[in-house]
Every structure is written in structure tokens, then in C-alpha cells.
Length: 232
Image (cartoon, rainbow, N blue to C red):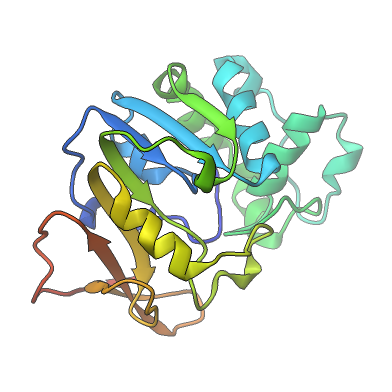
């Protein structure tokens, strides 16, 4: 629904499909996995209040609420556009690329995309997918353990410092992941050492540097000896 640093938009199809009717994302972010399997029983949790405010606002939006958002023009300060607080937060996430927090000056890319009206229409057309979701602001450590597909995409051990909520005890998180009931899918890259991660796909980001996305799961996957390459 919106751009976010570390989004799985380019790689979501590489992750194993959910084996349970319920999906829990304890580090929700832009929730690309849940959006792919949107008709399941979805529970989004994130400690960053801004992300939860945006999701809850989107959940109650109408088609026209999104379509009638102002056109972006390069350099415009969104704070001058007579937006509500939630509209400003959402537009702030759309005003740049892969931000970790809303920005209020429209980037050149967002301006060149004509206010991202096509993107806004796509969002408006898909609002029905999130109406039934449970969305809450909380810390992952407070979640009840239950049978579900747990899609766990925390700030990465090396590279996650850009997030607002980035204080992670990775040893604790690793043990917590192992204790989840049902299916657990944990996202990271191959630099991480807090779980025995398996390489999944090699990606080239906007900075032209390659990184290898990896995952850990308590259920066998197809990535033991297979890698693919994605160019962003």
C-alpha cells in the first residue's frame, strides 16, 4: 500500500506460502506478505506508531478518500496541502522511496510520477483487502503464542539501524522465533548470525550493491541449494 524501507515487494513471491489460515506479522511495516494472502485472518503488529496509524487510516478509507489526495509536485511541502494528520503521514511515506518515516518535501521521483496517481488508484482499488485485518501498535514480545503462520521481518541485524524502532536483542528474538507455534518464516540477509539462515535470493539494490536475502523457517523450504538473482 505504501513504500517502506526493507519492503518485500520485489521478493514476496519467493517466500513459502502460508500453511495456516491466520497470518501474524509482528514487524508489520508495509505488510507485503499479508497483502499477497490478504483474504486470510491477518494480524498486523508494529511498535512504530506512525505505521499503525497509517494502516488504520487506510482501513477506514473510501475509494474517493485516496483518489482525491493532492497531486504531488517536486519540492512541494506537504504540510501546506491542508491534509489531516493521517493523510499527511500516508502522503509523507509516498513522497519518497523506501523511507523509514514520512518525509514532507516531495522528491523528484514522486513529482515525476505525476503525484503517483496510478499508484493511488491501485491502492484505492485494493482497500477492500484490508477491511477485516486486525491492526495494533505493540511490541512483538507481548504477543501470545498461537498456531499461525508467523511472518517475521524485523530490522536486519546489519542494516536495520535506519528504522525508528531499531533496538533489537537478536539473541532473545531468535529464541522467541523458535518458540512460535505453527509455521515460522523469518527474514534476514546472509550477514546475520542470530539464526541459521538459508540463502534465498541475491538482489541488487538502488546503490548497485548486491545482498543475499535469506530466511529461517521451522518448516523445510526449497532454498537449501537454490539461489536466484533479482535486479531492482
